[in-house]
Amino acid sequence: MKKITIEHVTRIEGHAKISIYLNEEGKVARTHLHVTQVRGFEKFVEGRPYYEMPSITARICGICPVSHLLASSKACDAIMAVRIPEAAVKLRNLLHCGQFVQSHALSFFHLSSPDLILGMDYDPAKRNVLGVLEKFPELARDGIGLRKFGQQVIERLAKERIHPSWTVPGGVNAPLDPQAREQILRELPEAKATARRTLMFFKGVVDRFSEEISHFGNVPTMYAGLVDAAGGLQLYDGGLRFRDSDGNILADQVPAGAYGEYIGEAAVPTSYLKAPYYKPIGYPSGTYRVGPLGRLNAADRCGTAEADAELEEFRQRFGRMVHSSFHYHYARLIEVLFALERMEALLDDPAILSEHVRAHAGVNALEGVGMIEAPRGTLIHHYKVDEKGAMRWANLVVATGHNNLAMDRSIDQVSRHFVDGNRLQEGMLNRVSAVVRAYDPCLSCSTHALGMVPMEIELVAPDGAVVDRLRT
Image (cartoon, rainbow, N blue to C red):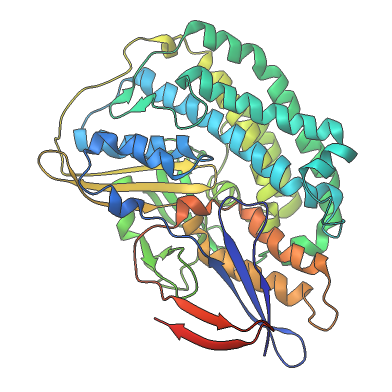
């Protein structure tokens, strides 16, 4: 049996490789996604005061710091057993919308647009953001501008673009500056215009990828995301909803503290990435997807005018339950528009300028769970503390982890359709990497400390032959 290895999956956050095994006829027999980095945040936070957790866990990633700040702060709110001030809820929501805009813009424009705009088979030396800038300068500038807007929203609220310390247990540590509010409101129309242009552009090219749509993880799974009591899309609050592949609701309004009744976590032998699954069905059959596509499948509606109109068109084109992971890109753009509309509604509310933005308390519960929607999907922080507030235990169920089993299945489907070992071409392997990029994985966030993952060491001769292998 022959083996093809994609040593480095490019244009993602973190490190991963893919193994593709070919049979004697040169056809794909099996595949594996290997996440090759491991980070021990869940262990080395033990003993730290719980109130340090937001700033510590924000350091997990430079792309997702706001998401970890908010999930961690919500877990700490639960340990303090406080209801944070309403203005703080609005400000956290506003910060979160800024995070969604900048992160989704990074994913679509900087990481995936070279495939979507230049083509999957384009010269790999130029199939990057610089190639997009050369051939489509206006689109590239839109991407830079939209991401800059999202980052500036974060900076104007929290005074820092990366790893801000503004979000704290009990709320936020400073009220909104009225001048910052006016600046964001002035810039919102252009950001929304950019989102509309990008959606219009993508809707015009998506049909060129019919073959990819059919084979980029186009498999029935369950889907999960936060929704409100009426089934509307939620990013910061709400309960967790699971739908099956036919659209039936399996569980609804699952509170943060009950996540363990529905989500199990397995360790897999080929990766440091945990594999969450829907516990009532079991592992590995309980595969579900989260993130933009998972959220839009789980929710009934977005809840804002323009995003709902785009969602309706999306469903008219591709069905009520959209299974192809290629459509993560489309869903991501709809969520950008939703986040911008939510931002405008929050800023138009005078209550957001209240100076009462933080509740103070000590340890009133020995356990707390925070759950939000990060750009890449549902993010859960679960903490246990002692009476003095020192961390005894932590578990992070991170968005990319939820998608682990689905990514593996998607890679297998893409490889079996596109990869032919008898006439191997670069564009074939690029499509295998591209299906991973569709999920926009954040691997620095997602690899932690639960479970025992086997280690394999190979001794390789200069000619590439494996001389010896040690597996633990």
